[in-house]
Length: 375
Image (cartoon, rainbow, N blue to C red; front, side):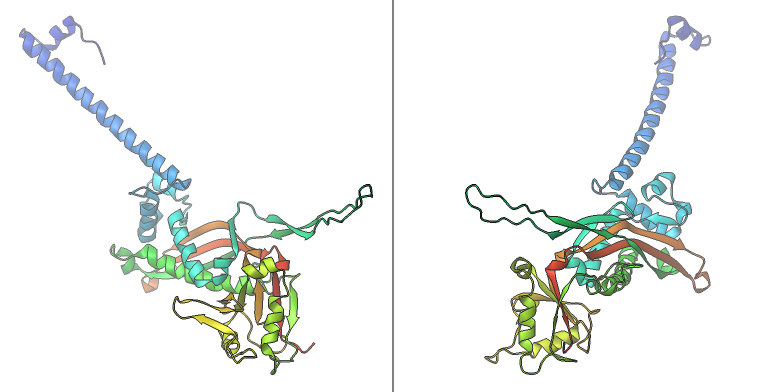
């Protein structure tokens, strides 16, 4: 604050010798200057808080009541990138018509993905930050032997092999009416999340079961190293003892993995298994009708996967094992590209969604699969 000397007070009066008037005028000038400075400080503080809020949300420290990322994302969906402020663009990592979706949106999509795609519920899912990720897989263990007091000890070494998982890109798009985009009461985020989750779940579900491992995740049924049991009949289960085949599968893997295991099969196979009976005439598959839980087979739950084979010659209709031995790696969160041009003649805006995900079996010894074959 500038110091006002008595001479300056006198000059400020411009011929008015009343001391009270001189002091009053000086105080008014000071008050105006003070209020301007306070407003400037408040403006800068608000801008800094906005930047801090956006930064905290991007780093995953939790959303606040007025989540700038969610508001920015909704504005982007409805009106495009040109209406976003610089702070909003930074909060969404916006580049032209493409944005990185807020963490809350990505979490909601992943939640819906688990509902649509059963493999995600049981597999081990991690997020990675590299183009590839490698996990060690133990192929041999140390072995202890009994020895006499002074006899030579026998050496043994563990052995490991590396499993490399590469994330691949999956993409889809959704067309939304421009009138709905203009309707603020319309739950645009929720609808987009639901549509996106369903599309990605269909693609992921197929890949996690039968993916080729070169342009998409390696599927459970196509990965190498899994032991197999045959039915003993060319195109079906043996007529006389079908249940024995399933019992053999259950005991084909170590006890630890069998105790954590689940059966993977499609709805048609479940229907066939429901008709199997033991020697006492009791049905092998048990439904928990009271609690609505998944049906069990030999005490372990059945996971219904539409992409599994039907029962048929040389098909693999059933997998049993600990599904946490399958690893899913999410490389990048969902990105959304807003395209207002392609469907403009139909009064619609197209939203392209993409993500990168990989998958592969890291522990093949935890699984066994059934092959329909006579030999």
